[in-house]
Amino acid sequence: MPIAGNPKKLAQDVAHGFQQFNQASLRQYTVEDLRVILFNLNFVLRELRGKQIPLEDIEGLKDKNNNLRRINQAINIIQSFAATKGLKI
Image (spheres, rainbow, N blue to C red):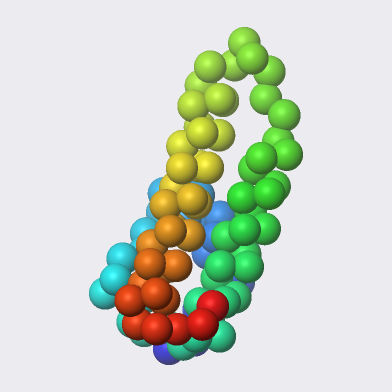
């Protein structure tokens, strides 16, 4: 099944916690779809890392770190899925 909508928006939804990946949900995507999703997850990850938040803004720092954690977790799940299935991503 192809990616519904904008892949960058999907990656942003993952960062904000609206979308999650697991082994079962990744089965619907082709290898090319997984490559596009990984590319966009890494793109959003770089954007988040470059975002400057003042040290006094504790809630902002927590949000940024949670978003980074969610993206890293999604990348790890996709890479793990690809490794178990023997896919070259």
